[in-house]
Length: 418
Image 1 (tube, rainbow, N blue to C red):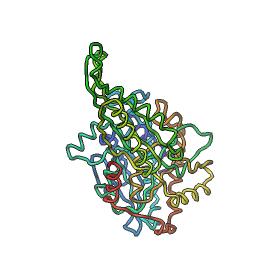
Image 2: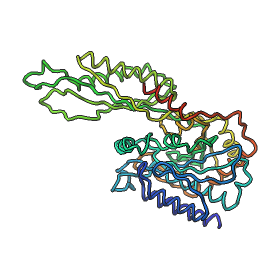
Image 3: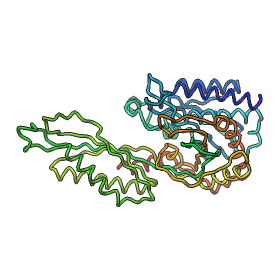
């Protein structure tokens, strides 16, 4: 098969996934599309399924090192996107459809050329569901049914042992915005986040006849929001803290003093320790706001994702491949952002990197996001990824790697939630 023929096949698949977006743990059509493609490349392929829609396949015999190349199957809930599915409101304005296509392009070129046989490591391709933290009532239902334990697809795979024999992880992700030159990115750390709910409780009364005997829960939430605003100057700018309180539940009437209101917010930071510190500040602000107005507050804390600190050691192999590749003109480095992903959870257990790639226009998760350089995304970039793997052959220092258990991971989560 020629490069052009593979490109046309991969682009057709990517366009098919883009046109059929699905939310996390619901990616049934996407899964079938990917599995069908893999079987067209290798009719004897062995596929290990996990969770609801996740699956894994491996190239090469067992070695002393095992690398995972990870792609994400799900879309975002974005019903106003110009290519959103009208039935489910999902849209692929996260770029995950290109991740999947890139993984398949890499798999196919390694399989067809047998290049993986020269690796001194085993290589698994792991397609995970539910990276985006959304559609939470559905995921809560799955948890209550015992179908899943974690809202995120990678933590769920970790629980199921999918990564038990893996030593390091490689992910890729779209870079939002337009670039004058073809660009990659390394060492872009991500925030972690907690999901907090504050249930303010007051006492209702008639707003006109007898407001004097009431305790206004909405006023407590307003005071809380003011306290958050006034405390922002005390937050460490290096931690890139993000807090976005919203009123989540409200059935208020203008003639009744509200006796309950729920405020929800993400809490994003670049480190676990600072996340705990800011969580304590938020909780104290909520308690103080309630007490100041003679009310009460109940606090729920739900773990989102852990911060992602990329392995600088593994990124050196990417940089080495970039320095030899004249097709890619620019490389961004060490630009942390406050977006989050469940790759942070996996990186707690083992070293991981996430290589960014350009080729898009618009804002990630925005209504205008779409690819504009498919040749780079589906041809040049997968070829570059193979050169990264080639750089790793015989060069990975096992002393630079680490391994933690799923129980270690749970211990950290329990500390944060408490």
